Image (tube, rainbow over all chains, first blue to last red; front, side):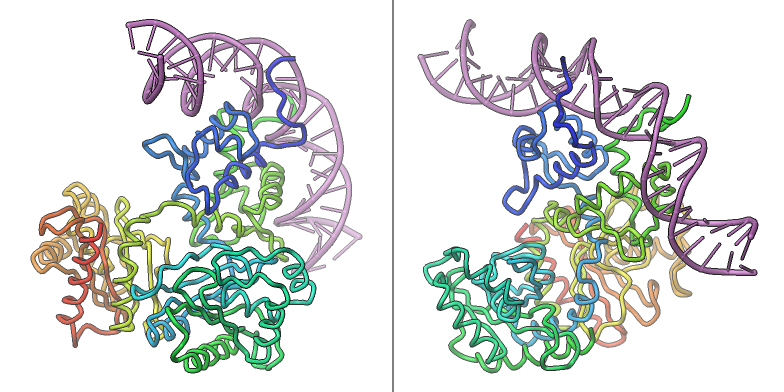
Length: 252
Length: 252
DNA sequence: GTCACGCTTCCGCTGGGCGGAAGGATCGGG
DNA sequence: CCCGATCCTTCCGCCCAGCGGAAGCGTGAC
């Protein structure tokens, strides 16, 4: 009756996945004990497996003993076909917009009830931004998020509106009714905007990207920029984003 | 005497690493049998393990049955601290250079006898480029590569020069003596350049990035751009790259 | 039909993996 | 200096999870 208790039904491969999955945006480095805890593994097990992953380069051990994701994982992860076609098609347009505005430019898709940022260009003049490539944020407090949500299937909109909207800044829209009105407006206008709803001093605009050229084609992504203020230039910004979005859609 | 023969000394975790490691730039999708072969696993073993990795999201299975790297690996890989400080410091300068030149801008480090590209901005006007973020190329046929090699420790230079230099285009420098002279020249000039040595119609310039402000400080990375031609503007390009490199070094 | 090829499933043997427990290493408080 | 707390590392014996040969399918070429 000694030793082995390992929850039945778990395989080693699953444990490896659990170990890697223990890392996320808010946990980029973990001590052995936290790693074991988050992965749901006994400490010696985590120690041995993590050691093997370090040997394989998937994890890395810092001098202070903490584990971080290894370079090998980065290498391999970059091979994943994450919206490859979309990114290839969008890249030149993102560059154009950046060159014209020097503002942070985002390309994002909806994943469930979150925005997933798949590409970003950030300029030095820009406000400090929370999002990086690979990060996920709520749909209700970013320009691209609202643009995606506005054109999402009814059940998604329902799901977002029915749960409490997380307040991120004092200006975050947390009343479902207000958000719903903004979304309807965004559909009519062809763009969505936020004013300091995600981070202080940052405003954003997002426009939908439709596959193909039809005005009612499926929305597959959103394009957006973050600027210090929307008081001036809003319509010019929106116009250039919309032109780019159409260009991207055409080449999808 | 049936069943199990699995090379003794291999653990499941190592097999998982082998499976993930079977993917590289030239093998972004693999059929089960090739995956098994490249990972050195028996076919049923690869089948089962790959299935578990698919369930865990580290791999993905396309409709045609081929395995590709999964989005989860991408997510997790992006958490890896790959030259994080360098990239953060360099990002605004890369943007500036891009905005000024509209050429493809690269940030790269040396890893052994290869260049590892850690950041890139590519414009629509640019020549089609081989490198992407995460890719590795030889040191002898790119601008950043030569810049890194020129300032690398003697044993690295030795190692590169003593092995045959891979010919990539008709213009690739493959004679060790010529390359050595170019490297010495690059040290004197403070920049290195290539003319169609990596791909036809593409010239590149690379400058070293030194940690700190001292003129003889350690070279930790290189900054470069790729342009269709170097005939005009070479000195202006070099000058702006050098200014940016100093700026990056200052903030490291 | 027949063959070839690649994927999937089955199954019995066994050694790789498990975690409790003991042993270190490090730190800070008394 | 000792002692407890906390975390990491190593050891070890039990046992079942994992292995792969072999058989079964599905598909496509000729």
